[in-house]
Image (cartoon, rainbow, N blue to C red):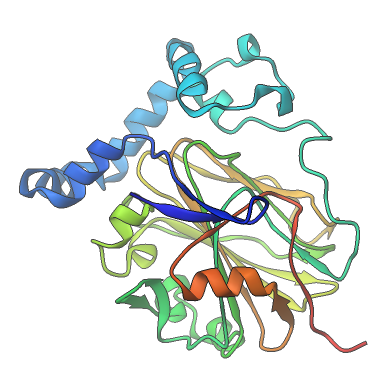
Length: 298
């Protein structure tokens, strides 16, 4: 059972997990763990399933998914019958009214839909995966020089469930460098898996980018793939002006994670998010909503 905090309702809710029984079996039973290490975490497994989800035949999965997880298709650009495949539905675009962007340039906005942890004054060598499991930023991005920039800074971990909107966006206007890719495995990023696999974020396929923002300093974006995520697709133009709220990219099928790192004293995260994180609960957030503010003196 995964409990998270709904900021709007100011109450705790239970997450409805896609494939929860299979996840529990895979990461807890001896046979499941054996298959995980032998087959499931491999690129080939995710690539084959991704191939199927890109085909028209996979459209039959959409209706059941929408019904089981109460997906609101009034917010999407395409209608139900217009999706060419399950993947086309999965990384669906939303219409312009679905996610209003906070207009105050000094407000730190959520960079996607999902469940958020926030940590300030971070120790680069002891970043929290879940209680009891840590990893280092150097291991995550394989770049010691870049990692040092974010010592004592702020870390935001946004977990995107398979039921969530799967595009991620820029928090501010600015310039973004080209993305660096790191090969890896395809473990699930669900809390069930995070409690079983040490340094999971450092094991999985991932990409990272430096974003030179106008109001929050240099920001490190890290996108982490997961089981059945065939691709992390970057859609932004590198080294060209970016506007606040612009799309950065999207994930193909599967649960995924986007992690942001800020330099020390550049942002102040909203207290309710920090408090819930300290209690061990993620906060449910939507793209464009305020989650903090700039802490840069002007």
